[in-house]
Each structure stands twice: as C-alpha cells, then as structure tokens.
Length: 254
Image (cartoon, rainbow, N blue to C red; front, side, top):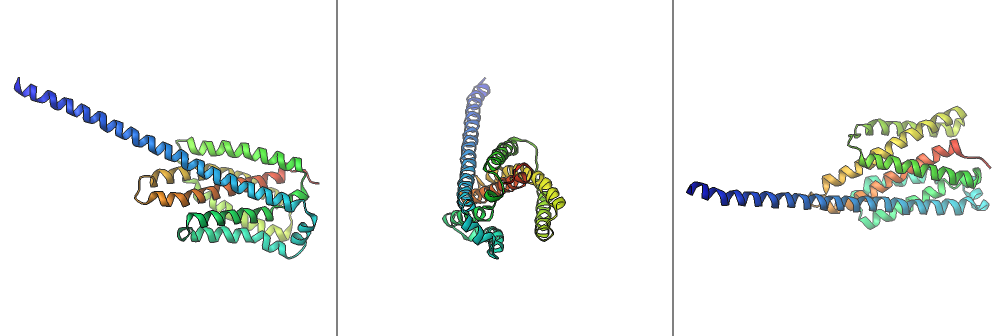
C-alpha cells in the first residue's frame, strides 16, 4: 500500500509534466505558424511593391513616344534589355554581404529597370489586352502559389529541371533576337508559361521550407530577413515572366 501511495503522486506529476510539455510544444508550433504567416506576408508584400514600381515605370515610358524612341530606337536598347539580368545576378552573388536595407533598395532598382525593359508592350499591345493578361496571370499565379504552399507533396525535385528549362529559354530567346522566327517565339512562349507556372509552386514551397528550417536556428532571424527579399524576387520573376509569355498568346497588337 505504501508503494502504491508513493506511486500515485509520481503518476500525477508525470501527467502534469506531459500536459505542460504538450502545451509548450503547441505554443511553439503556434509561434512558428504565426512567424511563417508574417514571413509569407512580407514576401508577397515586397513582391507587390516591386510589381507596382515595374508597372509605373513601364506605363510612363511606354506611353511617351519620345522616350520609347530614345531607348528602343537606339543601341541603348541593348543596355536596357540586359541591365536587369546583370543586376539580378549581382544581387544574388552579394546578398550575404548586403544589409536588408541595401538589398531592398537594389530590389527596387531592379524592378524599375525591368519596367524600363518591358515598357515597349504599351506601344505594341492594346491596353485592354495588357490588363486582361495581367489579371489572368494574377489568378493563375495565386492558384499555383497557394498550391505550392499547402501541398504535402515534396516538389523540391522539380528545381533542377525547371532551372535547366529557364536556361534553355534564355538561350533560345537570345538566339531568336537575331533570327526573329515566329515558330521559335511560339515554342518559347508555350514552354515559358509551363516552366514559370512550375517555378511559382516550387519557389513558394521552397520559401516556406526555408523558413521552417531557419526559424529555430541560432541567428536564423537575421538571415530570414534577406531570405524574404530573395523569395520576393523569385516570385516576382515567376509572375513577370509568366505574364510576358502569356501576353504573346493573349495580347492584341495595336
């Protein structure tokens, strides 16, 4: 009886301990969920700001015939076309040495340069078709990104194939600048939509997984600030490229 009496308080203490442990785990899980939600909101917020900058620059330049001619009617067009590519590669290589403020500033400059490089669309396509394509892209992007965020399927294996596809698209696009082949343009546009649709889901899941890996790591919070900027950059590029490729199909020319 004494042995049983000694055991009962211990059983009560263990039960209390298990309750506290589960409560602590639940609290920690709740903190991670809230942190992930805030992180994703920051990613989408930065992406949205970049899209506004790009749209404003593109609209202003695209509706100014003098500026359009000064840029795309001269060799300056090559600088405008390739400057964003140079900036994004430089940003990717130097992000670890940048402060968050500097990285956001570079992202803003990149978004403005992208607006400059695609401003010609306002002289080529009707405003209605541009708006229609943008809304279609927004709906598709939202669905793909939501799927990438919520799916339990691991799609990390898509990464290498999708990146190889992007490199192929880039090479084919550069070659077609000189060939001006309608068949190549059609093939590149069709593949481009599919590749960047896949990248939208892949990048969204990757952003989520990076947060879950780093949220509990020492010094992870500082790294996550820059990761949010790079995540926004990746999703921004997915959206913009999908929009441009869809515009080749859906856009009505002036």
